[in-house]
Length: 470
Image 1 (tube, one colour):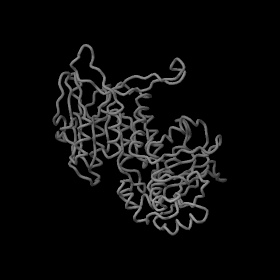
Image 2 (cartoon, helix red, strand yellow):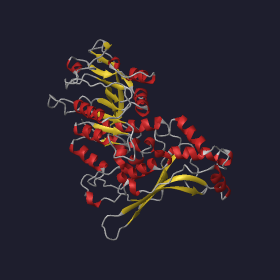
Image 3 (tube, one colour):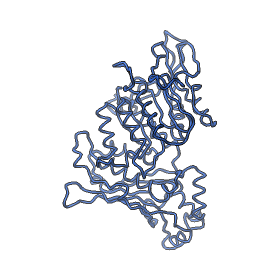
Image 4 (tube, one colour):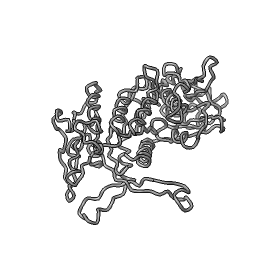
């Protein structure tokens, strides 16, 4: 991949943190010697080899520099901004891009995105203006803009799908062999784990069909099964292979901690036997605030409603608080892990041999809303135990089927001090894997922030740039 042309679906906190990380980890590329007045470009160092194969003692990986630019930002709450979708500046010897820093400033000052954040570099000058923004929607090579509107409608989704087509190879009048306007779509839009993974699943599928790689922070497409019985995740991965694209999703569970990469690259041919963990940091935060600070959990802390209010002020509670406190989010993350980690390891694996994963409705869930300080005091007095919302699953053989099945649940548990999950506090999360070849492997994320989520997306982008040619 010679250039990263990135389109953002969603410009909330996670994607804005990713833009900052891209800026921080970039370096300017000096202008070419034969054109010293041309504006410098931002580039990322992308690894191309590692270990002994890179030569020497393997201490450092070989790398190359790859320029990047933002070509589109789509968000219902903050407007839209696009470069000219025919990218005519490239033919004129320059390039178009969305000014990343200007976009951050506008959104974080409460303004919407518009053409003022689009810039064009025609070799020797740099200018702003409504380039390609506000073009009549009938001009299918133009950009599409909507007003600031936080409501979700089918018309909005159709418009986003049409824009994805325009960014990719499916746009009308596309020139065969010409690169797509965008080659990476970064998706981080809100999702409801009780629904069907839409509209994110449709956006991801359309981007893949349009020839673009997808880096997503959305757990919805991993956690839901289609009406025809096929897992949405595996349909998207099959679609990615057919379209010579990739679907990456490291930030969808545990805020970017590389649980999926750990399984894929560090545990080859291992068979997953059980999973256990605290996957929702909001419930851990609420319960730890109710426990108080004295000796780590004696019950002298806040009441449930006080701890929930504090979590809201921190911005870590879903808009619908029941998703966190009633176990839906933890169940969706558990199901996402089961679908991905117990699936086939290669494209030729027969789908009929995949392990049976229970649907969201088949995973029993507990709530933490009825836990009181008195409950916490009694638990602490009885062996210094603590309440935690624990997601777990174990593999069981079904005598009448060649396909084993997962038994999964999200339960409020009383944990003794010896339990690996006992010392989780704040927004900590953790997951423990048991396999047929290793003892328990435990991964802990301590008080994750938006930087963690952004890094998961960043690592996906780097992986795409390192492994892909288009």
